[in-house]
Amino acid sequence: MKKTLLALTLTLGTLGAWGAYPAASYTLDGTTLEKWNGTETEIDMNSDPALAAVTAIANNAFKGNATLKTIVIGDAVESIGFWAFMDCHALENVTLPSGIEAIKNAAFSSCTVLKAIDIPASVTTLGNSAFYNCQSLATVGFNADVDAIPDMCFSGCTALQSLTLTPSVKTLGNEAFKQAGLTSVDLSNVTVINTSTFEECPALVSVTFSPALEEIGSSAFAFSALKNLDLSGCTGSVSISFNAFQNCTQLATALLPAHADISSGMFTNCTELQELSIPDAWTEVPVKLANGCTSLRKVTLGRGVTTIKNTAFMGDTALKEVVWNDALETIDWNVFYECGFEEVSLPASLVSVDDYSFSALPDLTKVKFGPALTSLGASCFAQCPKLQSVECTATVPPTLGSGAWSGSNTANATLYVPSESVAAYEGADQWKDFGVCTSIVTGIGEIEAAGSAATIYDLQGRRVQGDNLPSGLYIIKQGNDTRKVLVK
Image (cartoon, rainbow, N blue to C red; front, side):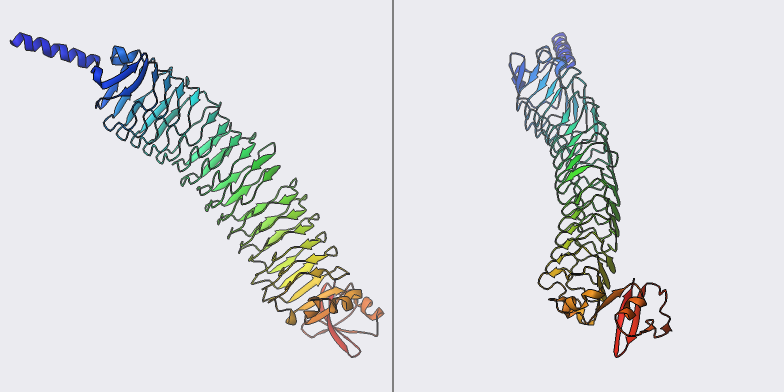
């Protein structure tokens, strides 16, 4: 009897060592593993002759398995089907065979305790959401021979801090790494970054871009932790879609591509961004380029910019300086609404400024317009309570939209215009509301040529000589007339 028990024990031990599994634990259809029915915690398919011959794991084969912790997938397996291991919440370890070719959609989705995966070079098909919501996935050996990381492939992989892509990868899919734990990523070979690819990656501070970059999709890096952005090395035109870097609240510097097609909201609410230089080849500043960037203090316009589109810098409360060019013609509506300007000296080329563009500037004291100006929109400079002076060198008073200067203290401000145009401005709608309208002159000789000899005082009341006066404001007494003039 003891010999029989010993023999039985040895036989079972040999079966365990070989890893043969009860036939009831799985369902095969030829060489396809259709379904795992057992409650085993560890599976080594290579240890079972029947499983070792399997070439494909079917759709849903292990889906929702609550006991499986470790699996070595057989060396003969070429394909893992849709949702094959989805929601295997106990699965910690997976070994893929070196010859596997396809990992299909959501194959390992929501394997929430899976810690590591090596994806071999034999993989040529990688499906959408393949590792979606694998929250514990910290290590990925990525050697797959694919040209794209598909949609949502590593989305929600919050423990994944780094990943090195193969050079073959040129495209990153929609939400491919959304809410992943990446801290930096090298995209030196990637040409297309799709919608929300890195959105809400709270630790992503650094990205290296390819010189051949062609496209950045909507919200691609929105709500990430980027600190510095450099797209200046891009050699072609880059298409950048809506809100690409919106709410990157740690972004302090940004270098823009020389050539680009940019949709609205590129840097909306990037509250640490301090300075922007618009490249020379750009002809317009896009809609909402940097609105809500409350630390932005300086903007430099490239030589080719002719238009600033609506709300481009709206709400940038620290913005006090714009380096204008000689080509700007149009400022669209709400461009500089609620900015921090104290003085605005607009370029001579400017033709029109649309509604609310410089409205609600609490510290604005001086404004200068050039000779080409023909119109200011409704409420264009409304609610600028500290306004003291406006200089406009246009000989014909520009047309004004309703309430252009509403709430801006014009009754106590001085308007300086060409000497031959004083009467026209004094009779023009809303321009006539300025407390003083006086002339811009190039010297005292121009004043005296129009009338009797003039006595000149500086703003401290000191009498000065009229020859070669420095540029600035002076008080002129000419006969019974006393007024301020601006000497250019």
